[in-house]
Structure formats: C-alpha cells, structure tokens
Length: 269
Image 1 (cartoon, rainbow, N blue to C red):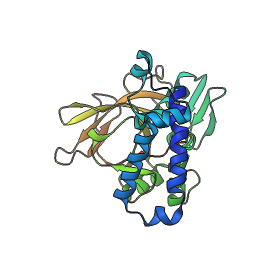
Image 2 (spheres, one colour):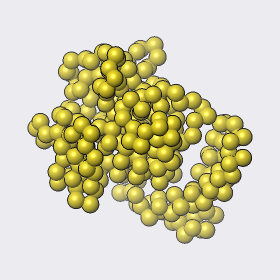
Image 3 (cartoon, rainbow, N blue to C red):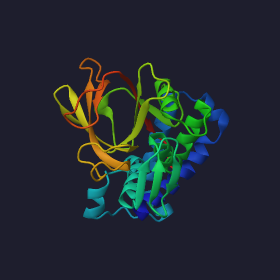
Image 4 (cartoon, rainbow, N blue to C red):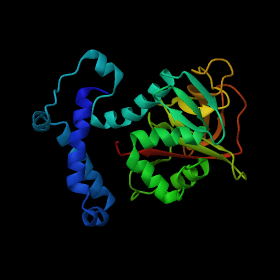
C-alpha cells in the first residue's frame, strides 16, 4: 500500500466517523441512502480539495498502477490481498493444524487451520467486519460453521458485509466458504485472490487458505501443508451462477455434497 493510499484511508476514516458514528442517524438511514453517502465520501476522499487538505499527491507511477487497481475502493480491497501476500511471501515455517492458533507475522510462523487463518486476516485488515461476524455468531473464533451461517443470512441492511450470490461477481479479498452437507464439523473457508476465470460451466479461482495439501499452481511446495495460495475449480449452476461443487485441484474429481456461501467485507482497518 502506498503513502497516498494510507492518507486516503485516513481521510475516509474521518468522514466515516463524522457521518456514521451518530448511532441514531446510522440506524434510521435506509441501506440505499447509506450506500449513496458512502459513494459520496469515496468521491470526496479522491478529490483535489481532499488531496490538498491531507497532503495527498494525485500522481501515480507506472509501477503503482500495475500493482493496484485505480481508485480508493480498490485500495480497500487490496489491503486484504496485500496482507495475505505478506503472510505467504514471508513464511519460514507453516503447517496445517486443526484448532491451531500460532499466527506470527514477525517471524513468519503459521500453525493454523483454515478458519483461524481467515480470522487473523480479517481481524487485521477489516476489524469492523470481523467484529460484526463475532457479534452475530457469538463465537470469539468463528469456524466454517459460523462463517457459513453468517454469510447465508446477510441482506441489504447488513453492516460491514455484502453478500455475493454469483461466482462471476467474486473479487479479490472476498471470502468463500463451503460446508459438507449433513456434517457438523466439515468445511473450508478461504480468501479469493483473483477474478474468477470462466471455463465451460465452471470457474478457476486463486484462493489463499491453510490446508493439509495445496491446490493447482500452489505456493506450497510438494505436499506441504499450512498457508499458501493456489488454484481450485468451482462448478456453477448455469441458471443462478451459484457454486454447486468444487475440485480441490483443476481437473480433479468434483465434490458435490457441499453447500457454499460468499461475502465481501466492506470496512477498512
């Protein structure tokens, strides 16, 4: 994230505090009105007067333009993706462990399961969204069950999260979770790392997760477990665009006894 992005985020926080910390106003305002005000804030935070007020330069170089999408909204999404890359790029030791909680960015050591990995990412990059998830689920450390149940109940009035219904609408920084049908514990949660690429009735998608084995084109060498980034495949319902099955690796067997939920965190830490 560039210095300009940090300054834009600081400006955004101030506008957000002024308009949205008034509980009465926030609770009584309908979703579409809140959405319109948020768009206005984003425009203001990218305007020349705001640049001048906060000392933000509106000049970017080719390298910055290549690394991030244009605009402040992209910066919000990119913050999560950048943090994921930081964890993966600086790994010294990692292993998948059910219930594991060792998440140490300073030493590059990660011994975690899938939900603990995503928990820590959200807590760092999107604390408001993570708090909303915790408060709704009643769990201090949400698992795939809490992620799935929370995402499934999201609506237009939900705070700090937007529900995603169609695979082609997924963007980097979104959260994807599946649960095995009829299972009380089985499931997996991961971070979307790119825009899905369409094939025939399916999409390939780069994801970040903690797992016992890697996906296709994976950063985890060989059969190493732990955190990493790789490509899996999602089969879709052609009528709805919703995921109906997954292949852990591109071209591997489809797992159909699953149900999916997808959502996008919308705050910034």
